[in-house]
Amino acid sequence: MHKILIIEDEENLNKILQDYLRHNGFTPISALTGSEGLQLWQQEKPDLILLDLNLPDMDGLDLLRELRRKEQVPVIMITARIEEVDRLIGLELGADDYITKPFSPREVVARVKAVLRRLSRPASQPETLKLGNLQIDLRGHTASVGSKSLDLTPAEFQLLAQLIAEPDRAFSRLELLEYTQGGRFEGYERTIDIHIKNIRQKIRAIDPGANFILTVFGVGYKAGLVK
Image (cartoon, rainbow, N blue to C red):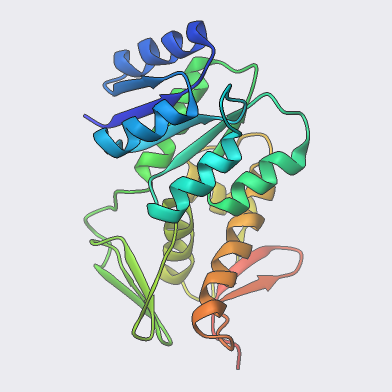
């Protein structure tokens, strides 16, 4: 069973999420504060974290920064903040997805399943994908540029793998959402743009001249090498 860490200070909501996750075959772990959540993350090594941005003892974005400094565990932000900039900052920091309050617990479960589904691959897929000096190991969920490891979040890894698996095919943002998120939800098109931006920055930090994701104006993105 996948272990899900819920870091949410609203006790009733926390309990509701636990119940829904448990009834859908997950093992929920609960924290009401950021410090408690960090401790449980280190002890329990969850498969995914549901992270409220408005915590009583720390800002959820600061907690996300701390997580990303040490590990690429999937993170879904839960936020009541109405400003889009907060959600975009969270995505740029490496969150895999976000959901805004109020929400249906069933939708949260669907998002959890979608993110975790990205971590598995169909048996028919090859084990390794290559484009130029970029290599993706689908079995080990690792990527590298040349001899250097490319540190990607689960969402970034799946998105890059999907593009490289079908080089020169132009994907619309909605198509990429279907492949990587398993559904179409509010704000997701902008989410793809943020993930692409993050991937490009990480690749260029290793190889400044590299560009494996090309923008297709009026369509979306495709994998390819700049000639």
